[in-house]
Length: 133
Image (cartoon, rainbow, N blue to C red):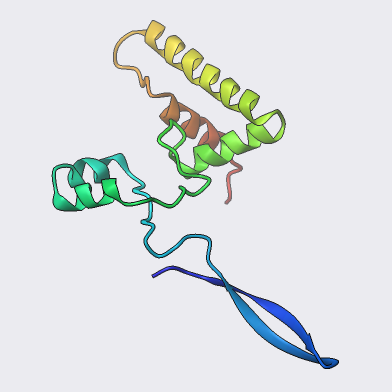
């Protein structure tokens, strides 16, 4: 079911203040929630549910949802911190360049080396955390 927000509404009638509430819904009930994961889309493909979802209107995705490199919540937070100190699009470009440089440096080292930039950045973040004894 759809979650509706209620906002207090002040109505003045004959100098009496009546407190009511007004229902506010952004999306009509016929709108479906967006599918959040590529694996879920693959699982639904070819089913009647997939055809139903393809034909029905879909709500907008939440702001943080994406199919990008930055799926990990810690990487998303790190990317937001970079974007906070720069323009948002410039911050994303910086992060993509960091990914490219890490990948290139790891590929030059040869075999048996971790080449996933996400794992390397996460390990770097873990290494810089203070040690609690």
